[in-house]
Length: 226
Image (cartoon, rainbow, N blue to C red; front, side, top):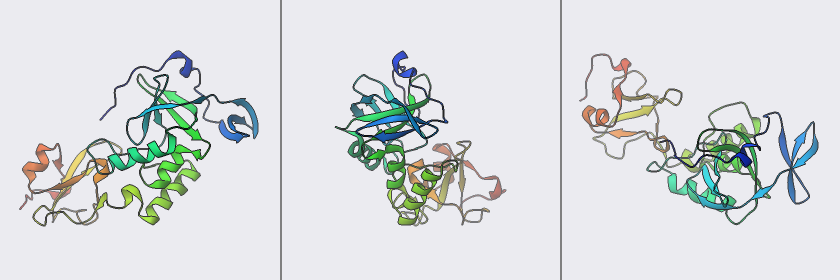
């Protein structure tokens, strides 16, 4: 579900930085780095409110979204744990922002505290996903969480139903957001994993799945369940 927030101010829009630049800790502050040379100090901010595991509001009312990190939406498995983890990482600490781009409501940023890059730490904790492969340090953070079964890669991943009578798997395509369900006998049923943090789930009937916005997979052909 899209989060509707107040538009970003002109002041923080000016902080949008080329994706070729990075940040490093110099002394007690973060600096923008170009060709391995510190070129500009980053201002620090304080956090007023944590919205969820990937979004927060600064004390000057800027809505910040962690770039490249996807935490569970409200109502999904892991929502509160992800929110608590982000709160632990950024509340009552100076935060530094490399804002890469913005939409009408939020600034998408790489966020730092004296403890390191928050985006990476959230992914490493398992309470935020990174589903791309462009940034090696984020890939390594994701692999750590997956291998250790941390965060959403633990209790939020389901291969067996909570109720033995509810065998229909609701799956959401991460690229298209299309909702599809499978039942025993459908091709790919056995390979389909239910990721509850993404809003996927188990259903007891096709009618229940359809009422939740899922359609039958084409690989079920003309079959019906049960």
